[in-house]
Image 1 (cartoon, rainbow, N blue to C red):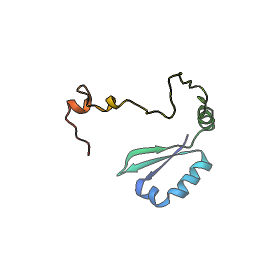
Image 2: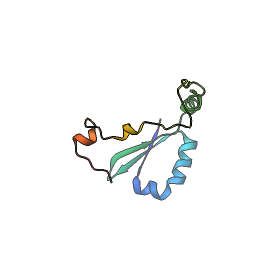
Image 3: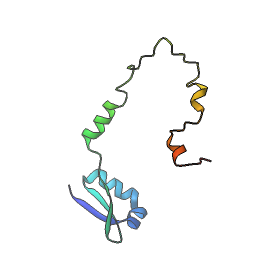
Image 4: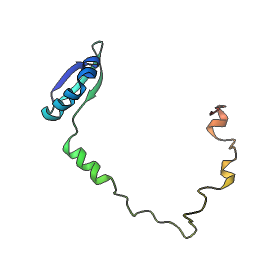
Length: 97
């Protein structure tokens, strides 16, 4: 696949046109910053697109709930909220605000 190399600032100014050209032309866009490659933008291949469509929803109706499951009950026990001495947050003394 051919590659077109452009700077990030040029891509930022003309991104819509560059994406349209990428869709039509079948080439990749290589973004550079100060002459160094930082990203590669490639068109989506048809097999990747169709694979994703078949994957989405593939697990539909595969989950079975046990008899004890209550759809309107709490998702967890209150004791699950107690501090866990072995948790990673306790070991590194992380405070979440």
